[in-house]
Length: 266
Image (cartoon, rainbow, N blue to C red; front, top):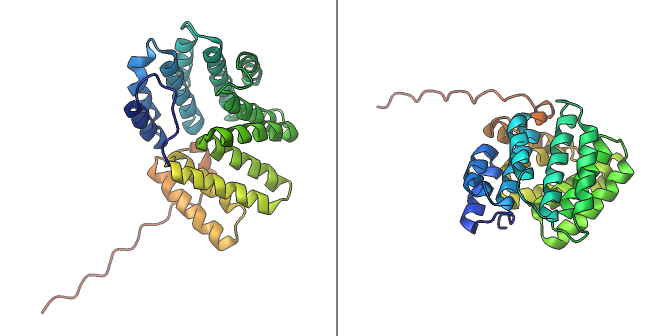
């Protein structure tokens, strides 16, 4: 499966390079590639901001860099679609700070996501991502799983219709988590498996370990252990990113014992 279409003003070579870095958790390097275009092209500036906001969610670091990137976007002459996308990113950054207990910015997140909803047309390409993020707010900040499911379902259907495999991997996983809470093990297992499949096909390496851990929750003990060990190895390979996954992983395995020395040859 090809990498997701990225909203840049440049050609596919840049898109591909940005995606390769992003998928491996190299957000700073990906953002640096976009910097020349981001100085005067709103779409490149928006993608750069999105990368740096995503870095905050995965690493718990880089908050000021993300804020600077958002302010740079917001200072540019933007149309309603672009202003809505910028508001969506600001809302997600505030949500991440609240979720990770960096600072309570829930009111800011709600206001920014509401502003994005007013700016983005119902058929806007940015609407599914906005619906998903409003679902996250409903579930994890407002404690309203019914509203969360509505947002996730709307985002899920549109992501599938538009062929947005990366967003679909997120919506599958979050709908599966709600199904698990409701006791629907078969639906949860299907959703977690679909999320993992999409991330593996996309090569979204930084998102595979969380998908493995999620799937482990609905597997028999032996398979669950195998999945968590695989997740732990990938997590360490990527520098313990995402940082919030560590408590859900088995401890680091001891190194393999040294082989026995060969007997002296004749």
